[in-house]
Length: 38
Length: 282
Image (tube, rainbow over all chains, first blue to last red; front, side, top):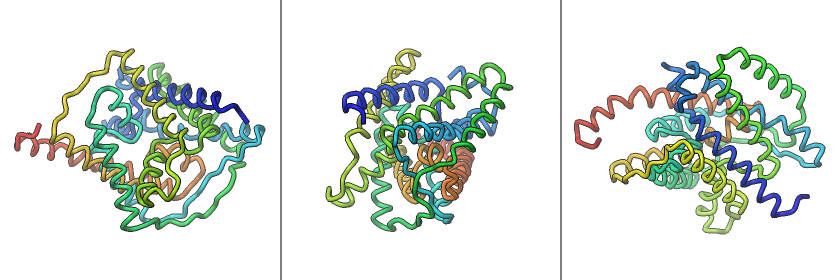
């Protein structure tokens, strides 16, 4: 078991990094389809 | 975005479809920590393909899937609020009208980590052959899969689709059933914060003016995405990250449906845009 505050900090941090990468890479299914069709 | 434009043609799609493998790399970690990762596999059912198709059409009309809807919101596209609201409404309406149709074929802990490791290394080895720009994109998306696995240990239902599903479920039961957990909201806020920081760093944040016709378009697209996701028991995030790596037949059907729906949506999008332009809506 981990402390609640640590779990919250981990959740926010990991989610933040996922969000950051998703924004920087343009992570999107529809964009993937568009690029595959080009 | 520059990175994306330089990437090879199918690289983004292939990376997206295979990044879920990273989620299951955390299975041994979970086993060591004494955490039982629950997963559910659904049987084949045509509803998954239809749901995926409708979700894909909605995604095309919206111009973004589940994750990229949040990305666009974080870049100042407020119309995405209508998409998110429509998504909850669509899910709610469909489950109210039709109810769940699929049946579970297996439920339990995933244990075959060796295969997952083998697939992971094949993917990584294969991606090394890519040009540097594509390779960077590839590894960034695979990192998302890995981080999704880490997140899975902390909150199994962290994906945005689950939040929508739980919100719709609460509304359906008039608050009788338990709504989303507090941690799901925190994850949602964390995702948005990360996206906002990236948008600010790259100077892509543009506070857009709200247009009524665009709100209607995105609300409609969101409803289609909600109905489709409800029929398919999840959006592209849940199926790609959790369904495909768990070898769920339903997830495969749903993802194929989403790809076909997205493609069809793109094909019919241009004539519709021309019609909209003709009517003075653009």
